[in-house]
Image (cartoon, rainbow, N blue to C red; front, side, top):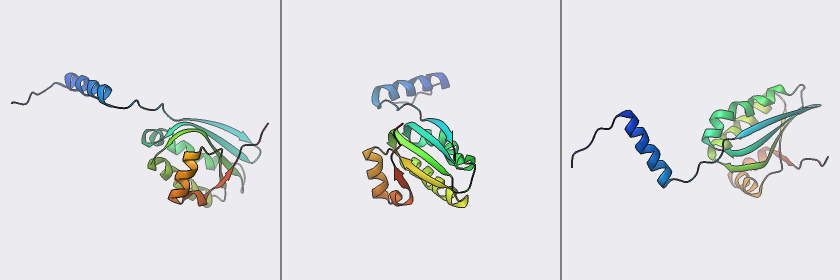
Length: 137
């Protein structure tokens, strides 16, 4: 059997059809919303903290610690709507922890879903962060 050389358009279409037929649906992109208050910044993460999410939103998450207006300020990372935590997401948490120590800021993780708590505890990352519940309004 001889190989057939496909043009770019045909190869792209074939790859797309194969991906659709044999793959799992891709999760929605990670959304990050920001709230600010007196001495804190809260980021709400909605979606999967995986490689694509980290590429798009990872720097936003890490740089948020720089927007806390005062020393001993707090970054609250609300994970209640996190649907997936990959190793790339755990790397972002490690970067965030290091950056917060450099700037003398704190990072608190809020409203952890059970799978996130288990993942952080098994990896040892859980001991790096204070875990809190968001106060009722």
